Image 1 (cartoon, rainbow, N blue to C red):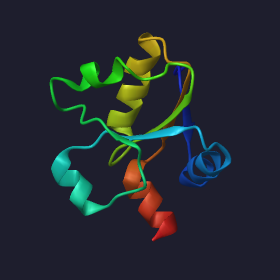
Image 2: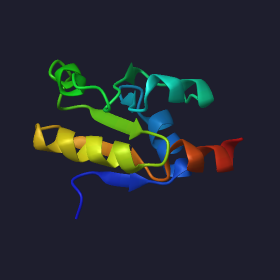
Image 3: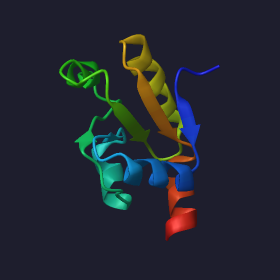
Length: 104
């Protein structure tokens, strides 16, 4: 069982709208940002070697909503962050691909 919760695009959008303190992380690469963007607060490219350093100053007690292109890298990041002590992690199931099928 994962240490985070997978959310459908509808659930992801609803949860973000309900929690103004939540942080949204896009973990795609720079070139992928050009393709399509959700409103995000942080960009952490997990393909770069310094991605873990970018997590060190984040508050481990708030909610993080994480997405990538298809949901795989964001699931990895959720699991990685849980191992670092982050408590509330949500993955956009299907990533931006699934989001665009519903909202565009």
